[in-house]
Amino acid sequence: MLAGVLPGIGLANASPAKRRVPFGAALEYRHFINDPDYTALFVNHCDMIFPMNALKWDALQGAPGEFNYLPAEGIVSFAETLGRGTYGHTFVWWNALPAWVEKIDSAAKAEEVLVSHVQNVAAHFAARVPSWDVVNEVVAHDPVNEGPWRDSLWMRLLGPSHVDIAFAAAAEAAPGAELAINDYDLEFRGARYDARRTAMLDLVRRLQDKGLRVDTVGIQGHLYPEVPIGHEELERFITDLKALGVGYRITEIDVIDWKLPRDASRRDDMAAEHVGNFLDAAFSAELPRSVSTWGLSDRYSWIPDVMPHRRGGKNRPLPFDENLKPKPMYEVIQRYLAS
Ligand code: G3I
Image 1 (cartoon, helix red, strand yellow):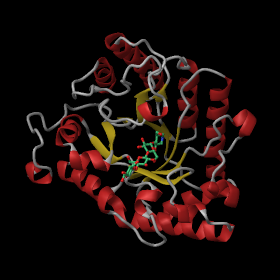
Image 2: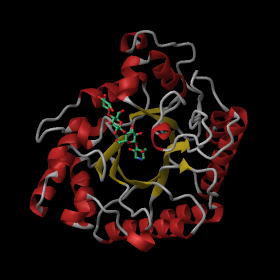
Image 3: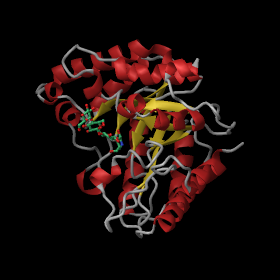
Image 4: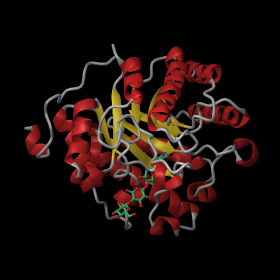
């Protein structure tokens, strides 16, 4: 049956080993369609396979009321056919908005469009997508100087209430689904990161005070080896979430290795060590509901476009190398996930 899903996929090791915490990765549709060897890596190693970009607004509703579900449907069905989990990223984000949404200039229209997008997408996938990032990256990059909320079209038109509106719409449209807030820079040591964790906890309390359900916080885990992991800080953050009845997932691990040495094997060891420090801090507070990486192999990543290696090396941000061979980072992650 699998060969029918995607011809050419290697089935030698089609089911990953049993783990105590599921391992997932985000899959870009273009590569899913065009690179069967890459897609086979997901089949062989992932308990969860989910769309990297196909569930974003610009991919789903490029023109008002015209929904294109084909790419997202392709990946969700693929995961389903394999008996793997999946994940919904994301209903509301400051980025990946089509031009027609960027042109909205009234609060009433913004609310109408936001609610109808959530309703439409949630209804389309119903229980097939069991967890949603309802909002992504709503905490200000630097909450002390620009915060606590991140600037966005939704903030400008609706203020912080856009998050309430999104959570209320998601709770109604996807009543059985896990509802999450996903964000970055929640794992490091330093004043800006303290402020981001505080802003996130305040946001969770705000939603709860309004009677809105928040199930999990997604800690993205885009890691910078030059920025130390805040071991106690992250542990406390996860414990504080737990006290509010909120769990967590690790959603987008990769290592931004732009400042690491050029030597590939040294770089891989340093990246693996940093991922280990991160997982160590998080796991010592509580087990996450899942651990996912943002892509799976160095063959495809957003990092070379945004933060290319400064000494002319090719970025090596992910658990598998360009040739789809496992790196020390993969071994480290699996050590934490193993039962
Ligand atoms: O699909 C089109 C394709 O048809 C076209 O030929 C090509 C030409 O540039 O563009 C393709 O779309 C691109 C898409 O990725 C798929 O490759 C978009 O231009 C590009 O903006 C988009 O970038 C994604 C970005 O989010 C914005 O949506 C990155 O792949 C993705 O890694 C990144 O992911 C974010 C998370 O959602 C949130 N956390 C941070 C993370 C990294 O920035």
